[in-house]
Length: 174
Ligand SMILES: CCCCCCCCCCCCCCCC(=O)SCCNC(=O)CCNC(=O)[C@H](O)C(C)(C)COP(=O)(O)OP(=O)(O)OC[C@H]1O[C@@H](n2cnc3c(N)ncnc32)[C@H](O)[C@@H]1OP(=O)(O)O
Image 1 (cartoon, helix red, strand yellow):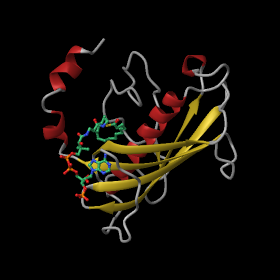
Image 2 (cartoon, rainbow, N blue to C red):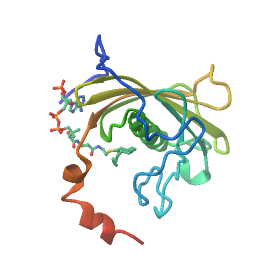
Image 3 (cartoon, rainbow, N blue to C red):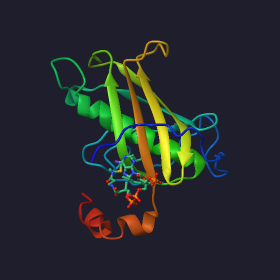
Image 4 (tube, helix red, strand yellow):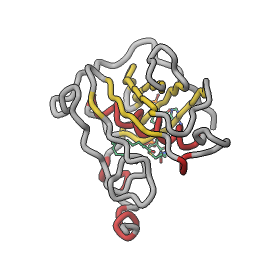
């Protein structure tokens, strides 16, 4: 199976969901054990995703020693997980609960330990259940991104999609 991030020529209509918090307000975490945002996750990024204007969200993450890949720099998989979290939260601005179907990351520059990573994501388009989202990361200068990501998320029925796995989530609680 091979897929690519191909934006549709025309997006389905999108509007900001009335229940999404206002710009600058945090978006409630979706699952307390989530590796990306959960407060109770034994190991995780604990990202606090903040709503922006329109279909945008943002987050910040200090690159800690345990996130290391190459000596002194972030592991690419950790950066990808951070992107996944912020990209996956952005569709909530249009009221779409989603899972990741396709995720592309371009790593432009090494990201040193100790730096504060600024992550921004924006929903670009929707086509049926597919939501197209772009994100970028910078270290303080938005004009100078250190990485970018493009993703296709697919809207799901939350109860049905996770029905078979919910008991495992409860049992994994520390
Ligand atoms: C943890 C999550 C909590 C969620 C809570 C709520 C959200 C709150 C914020 C959360 C932020 C979380 C951020 C972390 C998010 C994850 O990490 S999610 C975990 C990783 N992802 C997964 O486990 C998903 C595994 N895959 C699947 O379950 C299924 O393949 C999918 C994605 C649901 C699609 O299956 P399906 O429902 O049978 O749909 P299907 O008819 O095959 O496809 C629908 C459309 O999507 C397209 N499509 C399907 N797969 C692909 C693909 N790989 N590439 C491109 N297009 C695709 C199809 O072509 C089709 O398009 P159209 O025909 O409309 O043009």
